[in-house]
Image (cartoon, rainbow, N blue to C red; front, side, top):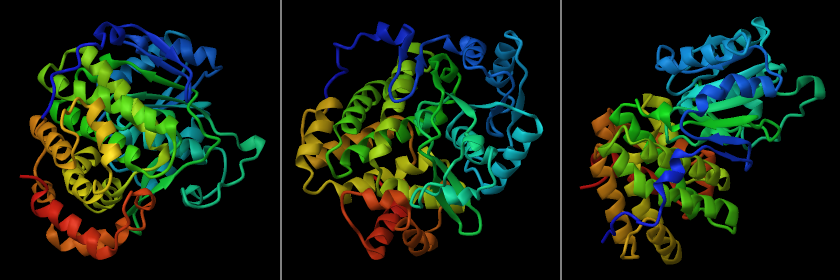
Length: 400
């Protein structure tokens, strides 16, 4: 069913520094993290606020970031009061930290929660607009010249979220018990800095969970209906890299080329979901909001169940994805089988019950999931009953 690793890819390309300009300036390459201070000087940044999550605040890269800034004569402070599923009150506290420290930029460093936290702080740092006024489906608030968003540098330390090139952020609305997407078209990262060496020390489980998240982004984005060749191209190239490097990076965690392939693949599929996502994310967002589950892990468990619902009548798209993922048989069953093989290879649990999600929540999560922005771009429409069945299957046994 599956073919051996594609032999034409030149792994050495992943060990060489690259600068790209689309969709934002991107600096890629092993060791590029050391350039952080120089990038800030070039952008006129003198006192950035480093935003990371609670789980990352004591990791070496946070102190290293401050050292690289200090070497260029820059001051900085750290804000790390960000949960794995960031909450609105944390963003408001982050805004206060930004303004009380007279900061002039945000450096978001870490996984998806750090990216979401840093971007959200930027959205409200220079204005009195309510955070939820930036919700995806609402008209974008008017930002006046004196309210311009802070400069933003994003530095992912996981290969999964793909959040480093856009302004979108998922924040938990605690009163509603829902995750909501917030953003603004005028907020764009000044620079995304991709250094695969930052991901080498990532524990195996987080490597697997975030990698599966990136794979899910590519699949869901490509299945979104409509003609969007830019996003579709990003999704397919990202899937090609992820299918090749995700199993390898679990087997060889210090392989910098494999880490680089995953980091670039994650970035590409993160760009691709500007087209939209689907029921995997709609369900995962609401499960995460209620049960504080790790986002990539939740996606990975739910993915095969949603694929069995979504792939009917998608023969052409299945063929394209199977080709780039080196799957020789171009059928929905063969495609799902290979996805499940990958999930088995990287140690993903087989049910949401395994990560503490109870069957009793299915009806409630289903209702919330249909309100998620990702649900509207799913390739097949569904009612609450059908979504509930998907969730119940994912809770009981998502795959054999």
